[in-house]
Image (cartoon, rainbow, N blue to C red; front, side, top):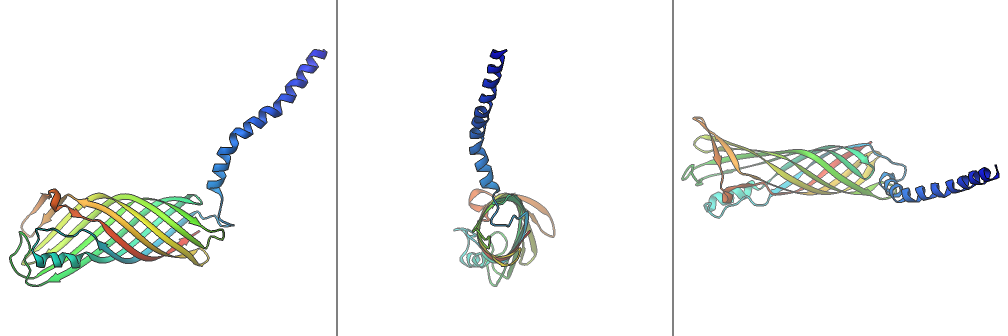
Length: 244
């Protein structure tokens, strides 16, 4: 009987030691989890809605084989307007996932211009549009009061390109591709749940195949590497963020 009591007491004394070892093993994981989950001050955002507008510049809209006047026309086409939006949800206070969309447009008109494979000399008007949509992940790093923040985001998605060229007749070019978008923004609170955001972004993508539509026919054109349509672009925008 005494032996059984001693054995029982020994087992009871060992249980706290075992529990302490389990707690010690769990501490690193729990600390990391608490770091990820830790809110900024008393704020804990669940979602964010963003809208931006600004200017954009296509970096490589050029080709050494183009005539000089046509190259200048394309350089004017490099500058355009950009409107973008995003809808995201916070998986954790510092990290979120959502959807990113932007629309880019540029236009130009030239007189007495030679257009390769279309006309020798004449009037040309061009209107180019570019859409992008894709999943978006980001991290938002802010101060203790959550009134200022730096946001770094990444999106990989689909580009949709079209360009209407008017010379003696009309030609519509369309194409699509995959691309990548990186953005960096600085946000500061102007009202509860509303931030003003200044952003700079870089995107990259190539159109390798286009369809050409004229009054008479539609045909698909495979582009060789020197003639790929390079969509690499830099954007500077100002926008509003609503977070709740």
